[in-house]
Every structure is written in C-alpha cells, then in structure tokens.
Length: 167
Image (cartoon, rainbow, N blue to C red; front, side, top):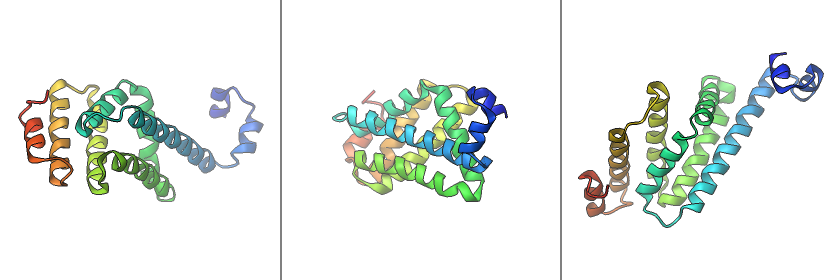
C-alpha cells in the first residue's frame, strides 16, 4: 500500500504488475543495477584516454557527488546479498562493474580487486558522511598498488603515485 501511495498508483495496478513483494524487490534491484551499470559504462567510455588510476579515482569522486543515488543502490545491493534467492542479482551487479573495469584496466583480476576497494570506500563514505582529500590520496595509492601488483602499470608509475608526485 505504501509503495502504491508513494508511486501515486492505484493499489490494484501495483498488485497486477508485482503479485509478490519478491517480484517488486527483484525488479527494483534489477532496474537500479541496470541504470548504475549503464551510467558507469557511459562514464568510462566518455573519459577514455586518461590514465586508469586517474579514471578510477575520478569515477569514485563523481559517484560521491550522487550521494543519495549511490546510497540507495548500496542499500538494494546489500539487500540482495542478504537474501540467498537474490544473491545471483548481487553477483551480476558485481560482475557488471568488473567487466567495465576489466575493459579499462585490461585485466579481470585487478578489476575485481579495484571494484572491492571502491565498494569498501563507498560503504565507508556512507558511514562517515565524507571522503577526505587524504582518503582520496590513499585510494589513489591503493589503486596504484593493485595495478602494479597485477602488472597493469610499471614500477615507475606505481612509485610516482605512491610518493604523491602525480598529484
């Protein structure tokens, strides 16, 4: 009833399209996931040419500007993780980001680790309400470390980011 009221739709219409709460939740998660992945794919495609480390940090910063949207997405993502029957959707969501990052980085393994790091940073930002410049610098160094460990960037590039010479 609350959903129908919030959507300004008759209860019968909502019940017709979503005969179960699970169907409504799955559709909401899938629509949010598809929208977030499409945005990520377009963002990275539109910003090609910059160094991968810069793109990852800029992506994180740009998504932080969309605070409410990111938080809603994570709430749905965590809801999917917490319910065994919805976990395949959460896995698909992660897989979508890994595919996008893998295309940017040229390496699936490093994409998985960068995605995990970004997830942790988003959750931390949601809990603390901010991402400081020092934390962003740490994110940059961490991404550089992951990419170096996976052979995606050279020793000199990793050193440059570790020592802050790039900033």
